[in-house]
Image (cartoon, rainbow, N blue to C red; front, side, top):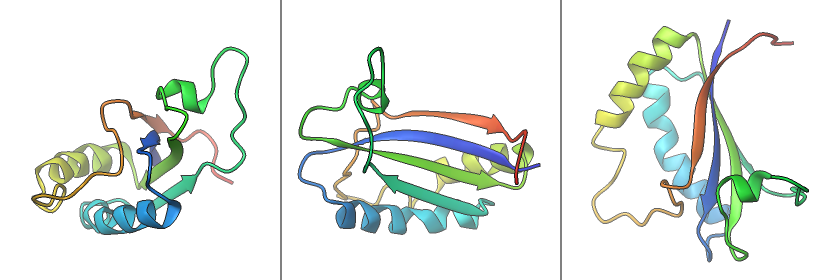
Length: 118
């Protein structure tokens, strides 16, 4: 059964969905080259404020920031574990001088074993 990395990512003010998509398109091949089978990036569209918590609060997004909900699919956990080591070591991951449109320190992420895939 597939393994999934789920992410909620704060996107810096001044970055539109097209700008974020360009960033995501640039790094997606790195994950694919190291075993990921699918990468999905979702730009916040209908993300309500919650009474206790919500996507924005989870990453402490400022009023002028937005959030992205993303997932990366892998064939299995072993492929993901090995692939993520290679992704972190891949020199293409952080091009010299590249402006990051996200705040990685506030990003939340985790690995999930699929229990249903229909």
